[in-house]
Image (cartoon, rainbow, N blue to C red):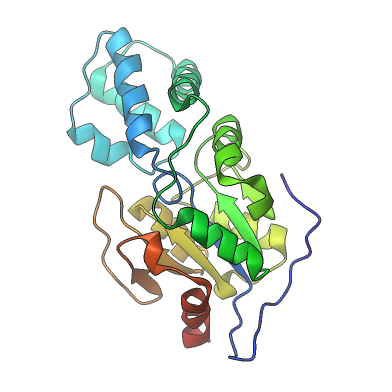
Length: 233
């Protein structure tokens, strides 16, 4: 979904040239990685297969098709990819039960971005039906644009979702900050040329040039995000 909010240069008296903030969803804003795992475990149990904990670190943060393909191959389950992705999406939305737990600092950060007029996009590898279910809890009014994994041909770790979001907002990817929780998402954001704030969930992420690692969203606010772009340009 998009809104009619125009893309604007949020340059301020402090000299910041932050143009937009692009946010991952699962594991970054909402505490859903465990719910996804529960959905995967329950579906495969019904198929007669037990998922081992090691698989969890492989599927976290990945697009549905990649995660589902891996699980089919790892278990030898007799199910087509399209059928499995449908079952997983349905089970996930059932387990949500209409409420989505937000991670610490998420609500405050979204409210602050809106208050400062910073264009914000939600960029997820989850399918559109899942994104829309979660969006009700996040508040659609906080986002100028949303991008789901099935909206485009290639999703994370390819740069396409973030390039698509930046183009949709009419901004320069290099003047965007992406907030992500997985290596897959960070890889996509960096390939798109964005500055990155990593908030690791299940798998550690190391700092790097153009990448800042924080412990939680409670460490992230608008002045901090502006310094990241100012420092690089």
